[in-house]
Length: 322
Image (spheres, one colour):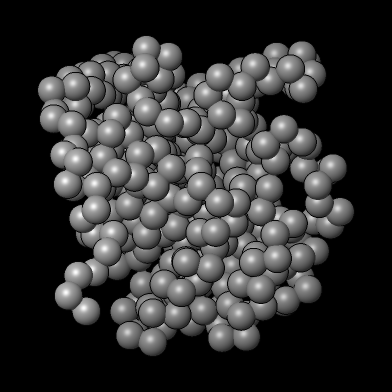
């Protein structure tokens, strides 16, 4: 398996990272202008994890994501118009505008759903891994979760069952150091490495803002999972740039911590990787232009879309005539 990435592969990863960043920044403005209902939780600063992990997945694979899951579904391939329509509550959204930011799902491309409950996507992904194993699809399931899930019992139960049954389950922790408004160290006494070791599950810690490191490590992990050797844990250390929710002033964070964010920015770091690999400035700038145009077009389509009808609110909720 290659130990590096080609220029084209890096450009593809950069396009994904830039798309997620541009979408999230656009949502900041749309939310402030009242065009997005409900709460949103942005993944600014964590884009390299979504891009790197999803770049290694195949069509048959599945994933479950979190309340901070915009990047995951976009990296998996959800179309921009369907995404914006959903988050803006429009009828043409991938879930008919009924799910919104925290409940984006698209089974056609293996997105089992985002989830507003901490750690709740983990057992859903494990169930999908059981299905892959039982049906012999050759696929794997990915459970994205944050460090706030480390103290949740359902993670511990999932690790136990996945290890016992040697499930094709990739557990990806986006460790941004914060569980809502508390540092991770104040809400979990152990470590994820130690927790994985308790169940004899291999654990690898990665620089989550280095997309090359994440992509290459995930390729190896996925290859191992497809051999039926049981679950793996990737702990991707990153930085949360925006607050827990959009509008959170983050008064609980040190000024030095916030000031250090630019130094590890995954967009800037990927541009450096591209330069080192031989990509031209024109190639990278063209990606920026294309992404900006695509996002603007998708937002325009969402604004023109209709609102869901009252009757549609009950569709797919109740089963009739039992």
